[in-house]
Length: 384
Image (cartoon, rainbow, N blue to C red; front, side, top):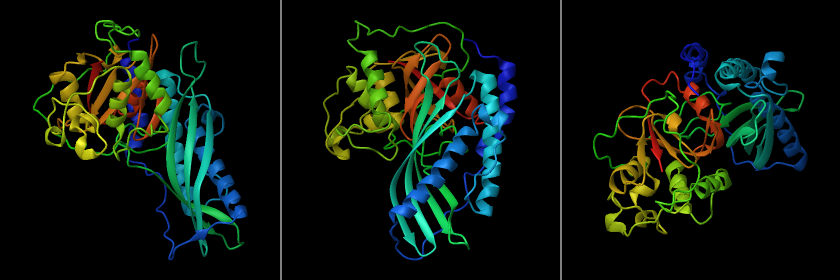
């Protein structure tokens, strides 16, 4: 469906804050190694974190229009001031997304405490947030929600009355892909692992939907590839990595290569001596026995598009179908930074799944809206 240009221009102003608003106060540092927190303290930490992260997620949903967001209880005054600004920006983003694609109706947040330590009047707690942002009125065949999994380091301090209060939240911010919708930062600019570019690429894909070149979601008998298996692999391993493969710090393209292999892409021959060759695509037990094209977004492009011709260029990102791949060059400097896979395609929307950060079924229209003020981005859409 063609997106309304005027709506997009209006939305971009509301989303401008995303690139500049910080996500929390600095994390306090313990002066000495902490000891494991008691069960009672851990329960307190969990309760405070659950209430805080639920309120943060709800700030971007339709609920924020009815209940203006405010800082949660059990936080320090300094953090409360930061969160007031965060929640206001998130609410603006939520209202802007309502104009783009309906936004989100409500949020669910699950919390896993990985570790909690106490040192004097300070506690450091490692948690993993699993959040579902529900789409309003999903139709049959459409995902019911966008979901993400995000680690946090939470810092608590003891108030004068002896109770614990949250003083800082440091979310994991080393993502190279679109940030979780409840976080107010852009993807970081990092080179693709072991990047070996080969010059000028095909012209970037546009972001206008002209309704042409609509793909089939069935396996293509001429290639032998099974696109449903590729998408199903991504659905299964978007959050918990497949133990048959190692995880990279920038894991997005490693994840895409695994999905392609699950759907029938055969590896090539190769060795430590040929791993820099973009004509090769193989995985080994060690990084030095794995090709650059396996986990490097830039190199994957050259193998898939030029050397193997296993993918072809799509003129618009809206032409993608199930198991197609979208890559992004955030700075427009000619080096691709990030890779994503389509896990669901409906008549009016494309849903993308990726690692770094772990994200499942995020709408393409949301990604484009969040990226509206990052004018340097070049998109490369692949028909796999």
